[in-house]
Image 1: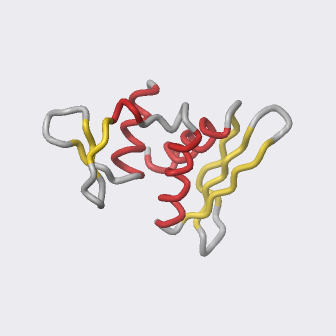
Image 2: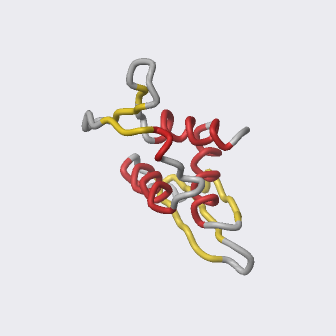
Image 3: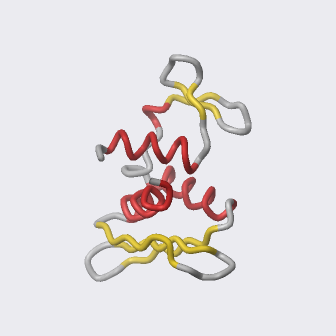
Length: 105
């Protein structure tokens, strides 16, 4: 899976954004348009944190913490505590994005 494919999957399946006609713009529930090339949760921690917030809104628990060599992100079913994805990566945003991707792919 390429970085672009992961980002597009997170935009559509986690964030539930839709592409605006045949452009590079997306829109969400609030109707605001934004340029998709500016949103990359694999590279930008603020974008990755949007993914965390959306997962929490959708009823998932998310734990992110620094480990000895990088970061870990665990996504779990909030009410049962069942772990659904547990990913280690060199950056927090990579761990978050890859855990969210594993959840929806």
